[in-house]
Length: 320
Length: 267
Image 1: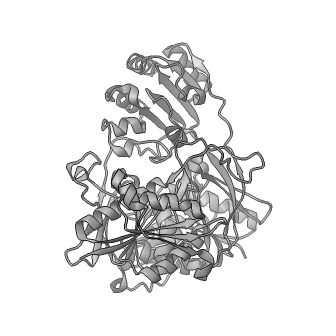
Image 2 (image 1 turned 90 degrees about the horizontal axis):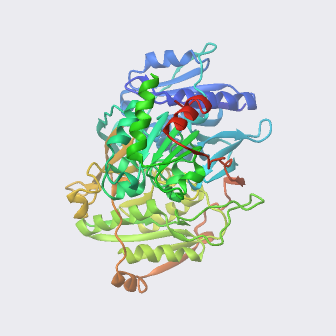
């Protein structure tokens, strides 16, 4: 039996959207291997969420215990490993979020399993599943085989559709034997960073600025807000201290793949291109017709961004 | 409370180099590619040095790879680390193998803290720290960051972002996670992996580079450690991502809007 276990991610009892994409990936593997999809959810007071997950047509292994109130890899990994064994899962997956990337390799270590990170799709023949994943910040696509009996993976949510509810499931209560006193990790605090704008890695549209802004991001931010977009920046703009570090898009910053990426006043260093070349549509606005970004852009406009962006904003407004 | 810190230094392709896949998909073209210390490991080395400057102790740099990796160990020694260990292995590596090797070194060296880059920028797997923490049965703090900006006064003064408790028995870690910032307390010994915004690594000084040449650099053959050296993550084939057509220019904002609206349906 090649069952597939997908670990759900929740925050205060609410399912994180990325999980639905991971469920789609899990269904895909189950179809290939002829196994059954199982789900796992961990936390405290998550009974209602387990019921909700049941509607995705899978047994839901629910580990509900005070010791699991805050997510801690040290406490959660052994529980996930136990659930994987109980579900006879040979594939264990989750979304490649901060949570998934922190938890699954540690659970994999418990299972003697190898892990494929940030999976974009599955290859191979029949029941032999290989994993397609990016390397060198997406400059290379690799086809990877995991040779351990149990295989663990995290998926890039944007590469799989959100799962629709189908079929019926059941909730299986999981006994939790984690000793709170023996834990070497203690949760201290969580501060939600509230922003009116979407997160860079989740945004449908991103407007980014670079050296060409000369530090004035007003028009970039204006266009971003008109489009309900996230704001990004090149490393040059970050290094100059013009914008916060967490706006940096690039190989050493955030790797993004939105539907529309607008690069304004960004010349297109390799480092930056590596972080955004997976975008569906790329627009470049730059004064320099020789800027490397134009070779990548679906639509390049040689213009001063301080003239072009206000015009574009006016044009978008007029059309609404 | 002096801290003994084990920090990793992987040799990777320079992020400014153009990466091309060999026509047969068996690897990448290495001619004309520069190599350097993995940027996330560089942040780990910097953090280790700051902790040592504040609390005293020792910083031991480890790399797993062929003899060329001595260059990256020397780079970390030039920044100020005390000594280096190269675990020699010429074949392909994977996170199970590297974490098994590091586990053996931790048993020998008994550090208070293992500091690793959250991922290396070649295979981007983001796993070794997590595997290592489980193998050692210790606390893990991945994606360590800090709330102070990299322009702040604390950063100029090279204050460590990882905060050691008064009794020296635990470490506070600020983690950058989805939707916010989390603080964890890890009882030492522990494993921490570093994210981009933990610090700005220093440049090696000329005297630092001179001194590094004389620092101890021990070589250990991986085969002598008694760990399984068969890769479990096997790369079957590499390919370049589908080429973007790109290069289309539009005449003005009007044409740009029309194309985005009617052709790309992105607006």
